[in-house]
Length: 527
Image (cartoon, rainbow, N blue to C red; front, side):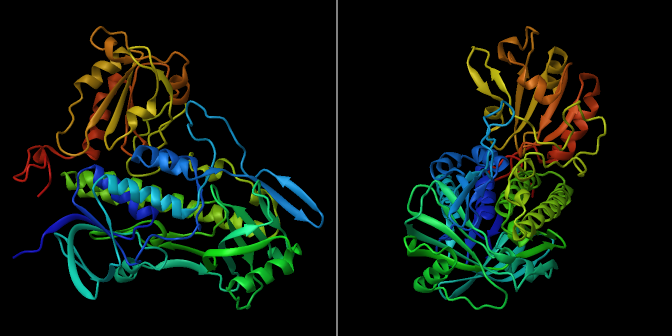
């Protein structure tokens, strides 16, 4: 009897792997997600979610739990002898019509993981913990993973496999993909989550030291835990028991009233700065830390991994529905340059911390990941696809609109879901959008009409009373915008350029050969 072949096997159930599982599950794909650990990750490690990531989590339906489990960042408090100098690391900005989440959100990683796992369970999927990848093979039709669990080894065959299994990725090693970069063995930091008494929770406390050997304590939201960071001298072998850590802290800060009590997680961190040579080999992909590892400064690694998954998910769905296999090549072509850029930023920030450079502590536009773009990628090759504010490949901004029945709404509410979105601004654009033929297979199309007075569409048209859409999208005349499922602009075309719009659709969607339902009732699943 032949082995059942599922659509996608995901190896690794951290934020990257679980994000991908959520996105694929909501597309109705047959997936499994495994993790060699017996339980979810217990530590605070990556504790900052960037504005762009919050947008992604809202679309995936995990945002409410994330907001409930976190808070805004507190002020820094630099302790210099008897003085404590306040410093705002992250400016608290008001919501804008085009940017719904303007600031980085403080939440320990174990709560981010919990929110993502809860969302996955709500979609009817569970993580298979205690399942370790031990072998990997592939051919022209599928990839097969050998998985050890409960003392037995079994095989899982899938159309595609994604390795989201961290910096030490077994998937990457099995593929023999190079992981270029460096590991700084002489630059180490103890990281501890501990209940702490005698320390105010309204500051992220920093005690600077020589040669960048600082001690820091960040209050984690909604509890008594602090994340302690203790940078070590070179070549020192640290003791990690509670008494030794308290002695080390007291030797540095000299305040006996501050005491760590209950350690819930601890680790010795070494900065890794590495980037995989490739993100794909055949039917197997890498994502998150399996593809790139970062220094901790700037809260970039986890966020970049989540957006790897968000980029890859819709492309896997489209190809499994019959789109051209070449669409999957665009994953590495779009995401690897982003990772290289983010690595440069986080490395510069980390090196600056050792020099007590204030600009390395401050967080702003560069870290938010809102301005990251695929303008130079393979899916944004039309030089005419632009307005004065946007180009194909850019993040599609949000906007405040009014529904046909007079209620205020957000453009992102229409974006939410696994579909594409097409926006017609103006009467002539509405006619073009109505006539646009969309494949039955794969992700659907949500059609949005804005500022349309034509009798055929007026009853369904949103209004842009405050001009927030017009400003954010840089539009002054009739235009059609095609928005990808990951919220990036796929095409911008005036009504006269209908063929350009149709050409973009052809690249991103299944061909007519896969429009009919297959024998299992799954519309458009490619053979």
